[in-house]
Image 1 (cartoon, protein in one colour):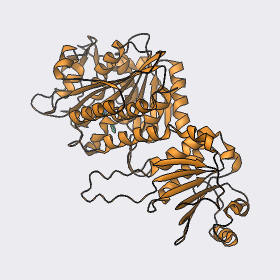
Image 2 (cartoon, helix red, strand yellow):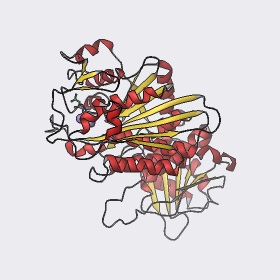
Image 3 (cartoon, protein in one colour):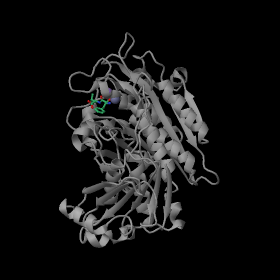
Length: 489
Ligand code: BES
Ligand code: MN
Ligand code: ZN
């Protein structure tokens, strides 16, 4: 989607869909800007007759034939004194969805003056683009969705165009993550995920390395390889690196859970455990590769960034891991696998040890790790566990600036008791209560002292059953925007 800004008056603007954001109060006054587009008196009467008072979520859509614009959308943004960036995001999404069916240019005129332009323009542009995304790859008759291909932010000075220069790379990263997650598990396997990562690396000047099963064996990755054992498909350990031009001031690693399918293993997913949805168990890795794509294009200075994914499938066959097996991770710790469905943390264990060996300043992992996190925080908020308050602040700042919601959860040390094994150093699962916390505590066993580390449980946020905020139903690409914002700061 091509994005432009201009300071034309509304009556001078030409395009197919015109969106106007209105605040509560005199609608007629605000519509004055529209002089020349349509008969204002009747528009105000029309709005009044439909009880439109510009409350958040209110919308009026008008179609005109053979004119510019062909569609006029009035969006309620709420009370002027309560106006927030989130109101703009929500208004933009609503308008954007309503524009589906029209092609050409969509123009958006919002009360920019109430905001810092750099923040508002970026938020609105991202919302418009991301909410009309549609994945048509798996349809035998992929009719192109009719939706606007150009966006014009109206009422913004031309020299403000640089405020939205990152919108395209970031949204492309989110869309890549959505496509990776949305692809079914017979299409997106550890090998095709690795190939996508290599393709991305080549296109955006990242270094890449794929560790095969034998390489992982040589590194002693017994936890990760135990999970991969039950699958006919080879595991692929993916490592991309972004090296900035000039001096390196900070080194970070981003690690993603990459289970291209999670059957549960011999602790098979049954009943309401949604086994048929477990293609999205590589949501963490998708966001990591999506972020790599965006960062490669943005090319921030000062920070070296490692992207790490230990990808495999959790399946059942004659060589699959047994419930009760004891394995050794690459840091030498022994793990009793008392539940083969807690496989994500086993793959992350070796991925985190690998990340620690790179001696980064901080590590952030993203994983669709626990159903317990979905129960705790629902589908709009990801859980955040972090061993360092500064990193917590950085991530909270990054996520709130881009509208992805995180909630900090405790690393309650006493709950480690629940992971005690009679035989091994640790078990992979504890009691049902506090399941997302013990999962995070398990991961801390694989982080070296002195490295700041954060874990994001995105089990609830990586998929939307129906349209939600700027996410169309399906894969959300959650995490890409927070990661890019954090990495590029
Ligand atoms: N991939 C699942 C977690 C999950 C569940 C993600 C629902 C999205 C929606 C993970 O591998 C898993 O199976 N976790 C178990 C852990 C349990 C065995 C301790 C869970 O949450 O039930
Ligand atoms: Mn599982
Ligand atoms: Zn899983």
